[in-house]
Length: 496
Image (cartoon, helix red, strand yellow):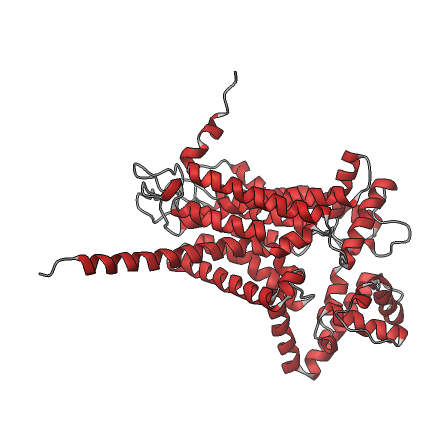
């Protein structure tokens, strides 16, 4: 009878048997939560959900990116429709439930990836395992499990699985890309290791186009990287590779940190991104007759984000455009407005202002005009709108649960703890991990503040915020525990 591969047999030694059992339970909880919304989907899905299904169905039934009556299909990122269409081909039918199953499986896999990422951050922050860890769950594994639990039950992740959106696949690929990037930067990794984060950043950009900028930033980070040496564990600890340089037992120095290695690292990572993105860019050049790396939605996003009378908020812009067209005033957050297809409303702006330009180019030009006009007329008001937009990105989450008062309070608390996790890395002088985690968060926030700001912007980033929040919570708990233990020792010590 064949035995399990060596790496499987080594898992209990590396992570702890108790940690693996707990992780399996968390994964089961996350899968069940997602299975529920697969069977009981969101009753009133967002506009984008209808668009993604239409495009995916057209890919399956007609072999085209969008049905004949669907205008502006290139405004939507292609990754999700291509993935869902592939699932239709695999199962022989264009069923929404099939695509939701794909979302559920990818969201479940993200639980494990975030566990590994959070555990690695804990090791980087100097948290160590030891023989006294209860049930085989040492401090780094505890951080990983807390982050994994957050991903398993975070309401926005579950809500999006009940729609057909682009976020659920990116919820897996972004933390996997960051984890792969940290792995590739270890000393002794082969040069092709940088291909893994490149491919994953490319996939993330195909799902969410703003992450193409993030991928470019990581190419720069790779060019600035140097090999990271990892500490060799003391006897009794379960890590064959653990925290970064600076911890006890760290091995410093080493060859191969010159400019040639950095150039190769950046080039290989860039090649990985291009392998994924370039074929679609070529397709766009042929179909759209212009250079469009991924999608053409940037013009609409700029138009919405610079529209000061609506405070740069998509639903309020939609309500204003609907009132202009019909004379009927609808509440920006009403179901009646949700039922209105947005494409025709933005087409009206296009045809009224610059009908000779392509739709996305026309909306982008109007957006630039808005920026010049409103920033010139009311710079303080425009700056205030930009700050409020950044706040809207992070002050709530997707779905009814995270849009409620309690949900907003929870979201703000998680964001504050995430900042605390970055502070922990800074205090431990783990600048590499801090830069790697902070870069996507900062860039996507800036993109949202400049263009279209919505809670959807934070959803994928929460896969990085949750590990940071778990690190902050466990560090705080450890500090309180050690202080209490010190107090007890002082109280029990005999007087001199």
